[in-house]
Image (cartoon, rainbow, N blue to C red; front, side, top):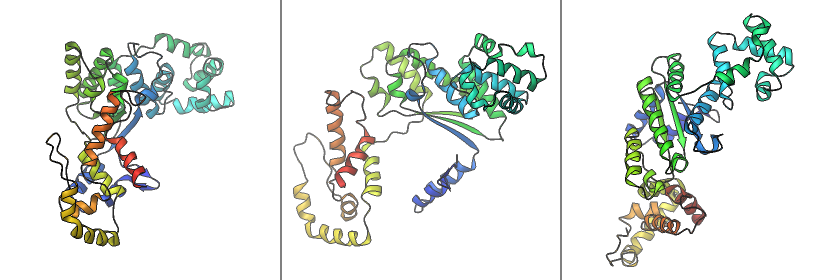
Length: 350
């Protein structure tokens, strides 16, 4: 999805950063040429359920964000279904206009007070649809009573939305922090598996789920029983495309974004490297054999990494991960992976 960011298409921002990589630039052009819509959300933040043990805890979050993206009231799925039905009949806008004229407030405000607005909703519904006023009495209460949702129903709604878009359209769900939300809850694992499977079956590859975790999901779950391992392996099978961010990737990001040198800096550091190259090998070569700690490979490596030594990236990551396992931080699964390295190295550099 090529959204505008500060008035500039996202593609143009990334294009500048991959000017020296034609293959990546071509992949970006191909990606933005495909019509798509992306829904990005933190699953724990969007969840309204009191307990994760509720049978539809995961489904309700997906349903909510999808309804909100469609312009419906995601917090109350029965109201969203009411709006969807009106929309399918082509009278939703007329209903909104009529409701505002009757109630003196926008429908977006009135639906938040649905219990107090039942009379106005009934009048607006009757006028917008041309039905008998008595049919509109308690319309939202009846929707609440009759509303049922399943993963299959959700997949059908997503398919209907995609079918209504232009050919080749893709809908992407980017789910942040799914590893911590699911943890070792087998029911949530199964629901995630079924949602992914149903979207794939119904939408034929036109709906994607991309999930993130602070570390790999296996590490977040921790020690598992044999049954949990079997359940978790099924989930992983539904997410075959892995995009891990390891310490080597983080080192490259730090060097290119935080430690990028000016022409003057490159000249000064180049002279420094040639003057101290032999000393660097002596200072930062460790031969105890317990762990391999990388030294500067050459002049360019020295310039890109300065003022940090290459072995500090994996060593720091290893240190905070082990500190976390011994409860040095607030929680075992607090941010102790690659992402936290970026902030720490930035603070140290400043």
